[in-house]
Length: 243
Image (cartoon, rainbow, N blue to C red; front, side, top):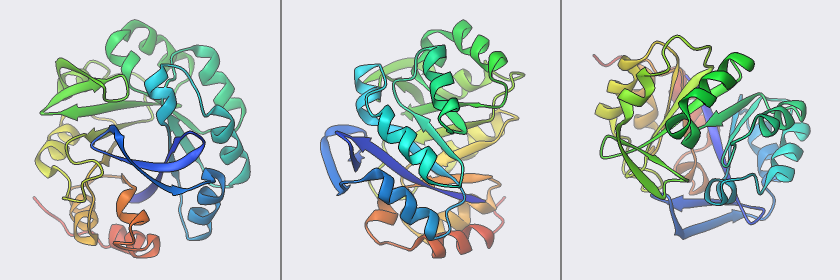
């Protein structure tokens, strides 16, 4: 299993939110670019970037910072947040971003998302953020009544690079992932599912690896020093097998 350190960008800084609440923000670094370089130096194989302002404003806001990161590191990066146009996807790919995470429009404009998947095969990541089993949109500010797994199944057969599934209730809480929801999502679709939200310990990482997840995203636990990236990578490689 691969560990993807998360770099959430708001007002040009590296931050973390608690349960997606923009009013519960912790700033961890003034320079997301330097943070990215540090994770690379510590052994990161892939980075997960989120333009939090973009998700809220429904358009890229921190695109410059994202592009600087993509150009400054040698490892691949993916980015989500406010991406709603083909031109934005192309701009990020041209800047060196490897994968683009699409969330809200996959739910609200499924025909557009399908078209983009075919136009950019294996470059788009389906981002599904779940709250109580239902998909949330608009940077987690709105809830739908579409079950998260049902939304994911709509896109089976498309050339999707992966699916990032985040449990909002767990995100930033350091209370452990929702393993049951994560496992159900992994079993619902044939494409790779990246687990996100709530990772608090090395045991959480081992369990996700044991459940067969190819990758997981961790943010607050790393920034709060609950474990080092090197420890997380070792745990991911030694994950226990759970039925």
